[in-house]
Image (cartoon, rainbow, N blue to C red; front, side):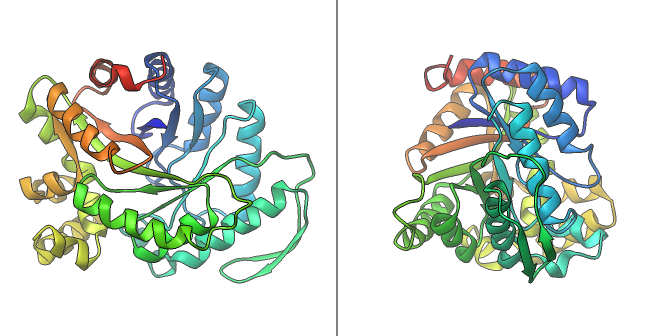
Length: 326
């Protein structure tokens, strides 16, 4: 898989057209980021289902805290139907900074993700579900025949990586540095040892914030927003691995929670960009992505794509041409 992420910060029609361009360029999967303060991802995914023919589509990633897991399962089944089976269910614990605005930050964790994954598969299989755990369901079921889209778990922690390798179809690991991906690969191998033989082949994917432009400085500036969010949510061991200041990371998170995004982005350092993103000219981006794909099974080009996202799709197509499915 070589996927691409669209962030619903722009009008739906703009992103729909960008998704069509991504399909034309040869990308095989489009993920949409999912935050309450952006546009609704399922509206965009529905339009993409109508406007594309071959590219896979899904949230990347949605959390099971803002929307009831049974409703999420139904939304994914509907997307699969509307796209003729091209849906991909990307699910994770959610962004700590934005979930704090909803009073949900303390509810993040592995358990809601695993319980949602398991419940969704039962519902897609036509079963009725009773559940009393991180959420409640009483004889819940779908009143229509549903397909079972592949499930990718988004996460960075060791337990989430291992759980994904044991139970899910893939892992979307939010990482851009070879050291982090090699670490994640070790966690995946631990989980794979407990993976049932009846499960599908597992896909270990790097979910990499990329900013590509003909001007390297413009590319670096454009990648600051996602790096700020990643830094704010990074656990202490990851910050230590890259020798990043934890108090600065906490200050970035606090600014994001207050909605002071410009302040948060200004706190991003070159070392943070090096640790958590790929940014530069087409040859530089190609070289760095080649290094990452030597470690992982797949790669997702995550937002911002570049200072000019539409141009970035073209530049990425040129830089990755021989890797894309034209």
